[in-house]
Length: 234
Image 1 (cartoon, rainbow, N blue to C red):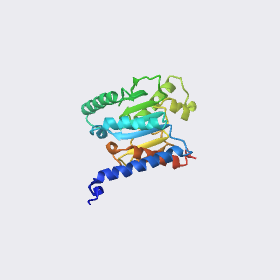
Image 2: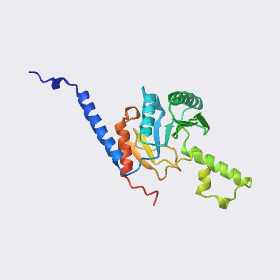
Image 3: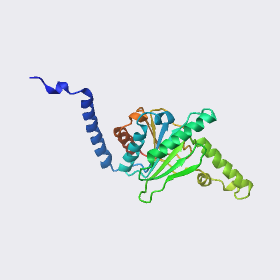
Image 4: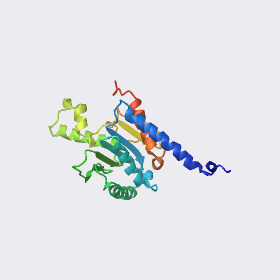
């Protein structure tokens, strides 16, 4: 008699064990006495968004976050410096794509342009989740803008130099949320984003490319976060 198991494709077997491991990891994460991150920042590139199926992956990531009571999701899309005309075309294409992708998500959504303009994409009074999408608005640009605003207030007499402290600087930042966990997918280096806000964040690197990111990889990041002892610079 022929053993029917010999005809089971390898990918079915691997998928079975992957689902088993995901369920086990989910149980471990939920039973942990450590808290979930309240704010997750995700760093991807513009090329990631042009991969087939990337929009579905964004929706998946947000829904995974909702399942684990994450209140704020910030997605930074890094843009390569091209000729201004090419960059503008790329930005407008990504902006349209992101707005169309997120229009049915039950959350409050803000989009930050490459020049630092805040665009309210959606207001939702039935959800306490907030999603920030930053398209190429780097941390250097944000800090430069904040310092210029502070200098202008000093010149106009609204501020005194001796009054400047961390609180004043933070008030002039465009994005005021400090992420608990920063996930960098498919890369070994952080992007130029949330330089000030992420100084005490936990950083998680994964070799898995954005388009191949699974819930299993998301759970690994959550588990890693729960296992760390946060010191906030102390």
